[in-house]
Image 1 (tube, helix red, strand yellow):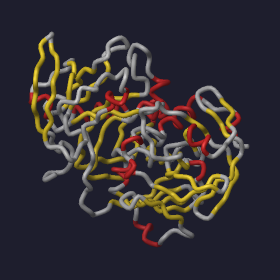
Image 2 (cartoon, rainbow, N blue to C red; image 1 turned 90 degrees about the vertical axis):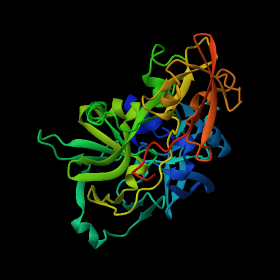
Image 3 (cartoon, helix red, strand yellow; image 1 turned 90 degrees about the horizontal axis):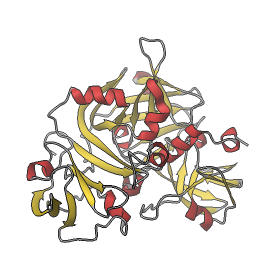
Amino acid sequence: MPRPFRIISCALLLLLAAALAGCAATPDERMWVDAKINGAPARLFIDTGSATAMLMRDEAKKFGLAITDRPGLGISDPVSLEFWNSTSTTRLVIDQVPPYIKLDMDGVIGWAQLRGKILRFDANARRITPLDQLPPEVAGWTKLRVRPNPQIMTLEVPSASGLPGLIYVDTGNPGGIGLSPAHWQTWRAAHLGEPATLRIFFTPSARRLTSPQTNPVSPGTVVAEEMWAQEYALGPLTITETPIGESDPATAAFGGPRHLATLGMAALRRLDFIYDGRNNYVYLHPLDIPPALYSHNRLGAVFTPADATHDYLVARVEPGGPADRAGVRNGDQLTSINGHTHLNWLIHPDAGLLNFEWPWASAIHLHVQRDGEELQIGLFLENILGPDGF
C-alpha cells in the first residue's frame, strides 16, 4: 500500500484539496479521460495538481465503495482503476464539497497515476495522449527537470542560489500563471494602472488555512486579483498572452520560498508540453497561435458575506474596473441584481460565489444599500482581461 494512504500528511491534505480550486464553474477547461472504477464507467479528469486519484463522497457511494474516514478526508477500500488501456489496483481519496458547489464529475485522476509515463499535453484540445517514445522535435525545446517524488507535478528551474525554483503544473486549475505571494507583489507593483479584475472561487484548502477572523462565514471561499501578462519569464521559459495572479492558498502554503509559480490550463494553452516520466523531464515549446478567449469576472467586483450574523453580501471592488467607474464602493450591501432578490447567502449559499463571467450579458442593474440609502446602479460588463482587441 502506498505510504500516502497509511499516513495522510497535512501537506497532502492541502494539495488534494487544491485539486478542486475553481473547478466548479469550468467543466470545459478539464482534460477528461475514459475511465472505469471496478468496471463501471467513471467521469474523471486528469489533475496534475492532485496528489492522487480522488472521488467525491456522493459519487463514491454511487460506486458502492466502502470508505474509511480519516481526519479531513476518507479513503476507499482497494478498487480497480482503468484508463488508457491500463488497469491498476489502488485506494481512492474521498472528499466532500458543500452542496451549493455543483460538480459535473465523479472525481479526478491525480499525479500518482501519471508518473513514469510519456505524455503529450494538449490544453487547447483538452487532451493528454500517452506516447511510446519522445518525438524528435523536442530536441530543440526548453527542457526542465521534473522532481521525481513530489505530491504534484513539479518542475525545477535553475537559479543563481544553487537551489532550483519550483513550478507546479496544475491541470485542474483553469487559470493562467499563479505566482507565489512574493513574486505576485513584485509583478503587481510593476504594473500599476493596468486592467485588473477579481475572481471568487471555492477551494477546500481554504477551509483549513483561514481563521474565523479572516474567513468567518465562507470557509473555502477565496477572492483574488487577476490581470493579463503580455509575457512572463520563468527561468528559460517565457509564456506570452496569459492571465496572471496570485497562487491559491493551498499552493502558497505548500510551496514555501522556492515556489515561483503554478501553471494552470490557460497558461498551458500557450505551450506545447511533453512529459518524459521515464527520465523525469518535461519539454516545453511556446505555441505561435492567437490566445484563446479567457472567461473572467467582467464586473470587476464580487460580493461576499460580511460576517456570520448578517444575511446580506457586501461589495469588494477592483479600482478602475467597470463597477468602480459606475459608482459601486467597497462595503456596499447588495440587495438585487437585475431584479433578482434571492441573495440571502444563509438560504442561498451560492449567491456568495457569483463571478460575473456571464458572456451572454452586456449590462446589469444593481440595487445596493450604502449608509442606509438605497442606490440603483446600472453598468456595462466589459472584457477586462485579454490582449488588445478582445
